[in-house]
Image (spheres, helix red, strand yellow):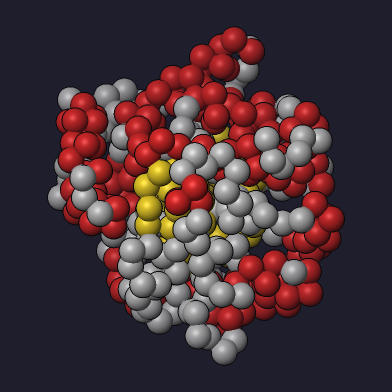
Length: 364
């Protein structure tokens, strides 16, 4: 019933400026007004990654809950895991408004938020106050004006180690000038050396050694992807998230929106991000768990991500346009897929079509 109420309310939310609508959604979750699944997840959805049990592979992507306000509500809605952030050491306002645009016809968003968040200290208090179990990752970033951006990432790992299930190192947001330069092999090598050294120092004192995931952009040139992945493999990262939003505008119907700067998410991103996901799976020989992100708005899209190489999935924009009932529909389709293919676990299909996807052009 609550899911139907959300679907009914969506036109009202769309009448509001996107950030205002998003804030109302967060307040609703904080107040406990959200749908809960009526039955437990089918066992075929469950998987173990990094020694952690996930009841299903669907997670909320970073950007939805930037300040760790509602991770437990997200889990209670039926997500298998939640990721908060991106969080920077110091609070920052982000870029000037308007900075989020709905592309109704395309079911897509363009945002140029710019790591707006309340900083580490506020989020830490909230995460310490959690009483529920469940996997909650912390997505760490760097302040826009940081003199040493690698130090900001290391600071996030140091501060949140006791409360994070895993970390995502976000070097792929298109909305902080120069941030994507950290994906260049030399810069990435230095960044990961410092982040992993911080983790090792903490582990030496008895702190938990949390998995480190690196989030890549979908706009990496084909010739650059292999050396970047080589650095990730050399450092032994625990996971790779593919992908962040794109600066490309393929599939955008409205030329006026296409001219808006910022990262594009939703269905126009799906093909590009899935091709890059598959290429990363092939380059890593399937040895590193991948998180598939970008344009998941149906069971078919979720299945394609898994077949392209994803063990875990994240969505956000799809929820904006389809409401929370999308979660149950995707789960239903994943279970049906497992039944049709005789799979004991949906995750067993990860990478089954990676070679097919990997040779496709990034532009559909």
